[in-house]
Length: 407
Image 1: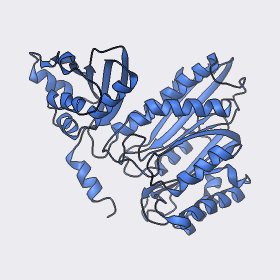
Image 2: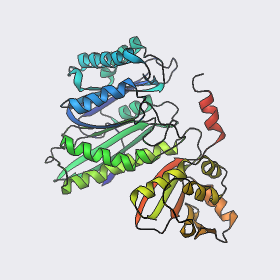
Image 3: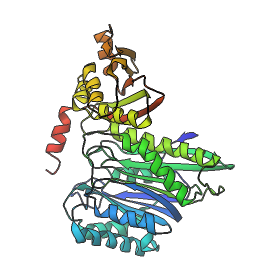
Image 4: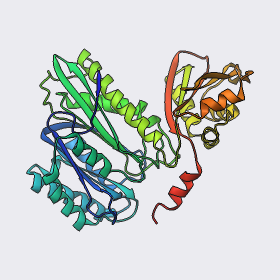
């Protein structure tokens, strides 16, 4: 696998655009479009929140019921969530407008929104944007970056990843972009993620791997404990790499799976590391658990602990908070067996052995915790399974950003 520069325009046949449609009433870009020259088999995963946005309902229908998709229209600034029939009608009008200007079927148009919950989409601005975006579509890296910037809300940086692998003698490219910085909590988060690939892959196989990979990537990140109404991951494959069709449980499936896993994992880490107000990415590894589920529950409990996150911000090796979070997780645990380490580019330090503090240096611990990223490793010595979760520190700025979000 080769890591390359790019995002949604990296794969053959994909174009993108981003622009300011004045949805946010400021100078920031707030609408994006991704388009494939050829129809795409499509997979998707969505929020588990029972309060879900109109675009989620629309995209579920397209992913499950349509033979293919060919374009995605995305806006930031307004979430189109808790908007009733008017919100549903807005999605249909977006698809109808895109269908007309792109000359593709309405049921091949996916839509996504992010922003303030409860507000109706300004459809005059949305439709105007949809009519303008096709003129800006381009396959360049710059066009992909404009799209990645247009979907941002409180994000501080755009988030893009791309890789290439060889499958059946053909070069297959996978690229993606995502947004997310707040309302980030398993399962999934206030995040939108769009993956494009020129792989030729069976729809069922693509859905199978996407669902599995999301469990170990986007479902293992947390910033603040809030699960959003709009979470969406869409994977579009147009087959333009001309490889033999990838089907489930084959060697080609494994190669593509590993590449897609890398893309989704790196995008997940970019979201966690850009958490609202944060100063560092906080990675938690649970090792030698009895089961994978036990490892996941423990890792999530540590990474979501507000007290632990605050200690990471203060560069304080307060390991008792980690052990405490493991204890209330609900997972089986033998505290007197647990070893805990902190690790960063400044080194690795064992701070707990068999449930008790080691004779570690507080100065060295502070040095390790002052770097970005920071990793906490918990060895529970109960088996061979492991899991990793990603989050960030909890800072003063998180409260300020969210107190001022609508103002």
